[in-house]
Image (cartoon, rainbow, N blue to C red; front, side, top):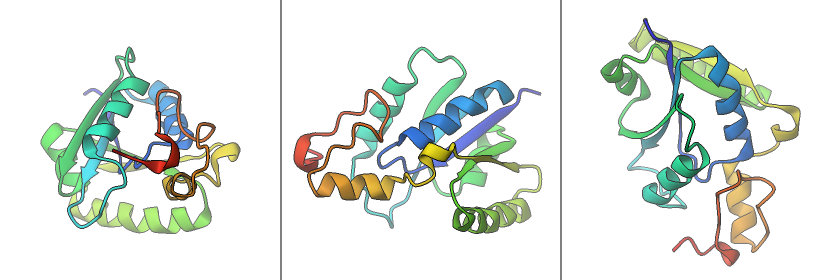
Length: 159
């Protein structure tokens, strides 16, 4: 059975920390599906189309990476697509506690799906999409925090 993993997130925007986790996971899996969860309750900073375009641009030419979006629960997306692993990144102890709770609930709902945690690289431990959005909102330059290919208009105008 092929080893597929999903790396779910909002990627609003994708950061170099996200990119690092995805690329570091490639030797372990036959395919990594980077998937944006559609959450109607959460107001996104960037459109779904913009985020999907960024992901496609960043990982173009990489046959082991697939880009997707999905509504509902991640475990339902995994079951529907026969994906046995959920990939998550951990920056801090708080991330661990939060992700552990989600991972345990996912295990109760879908016993055949395992959650795999990757520690962030030290240089990305403080980096989050929330911080990047705040820098954008205040007119700062985020180019060092997002992957090459993510072009954000100056002044945070998302269009």
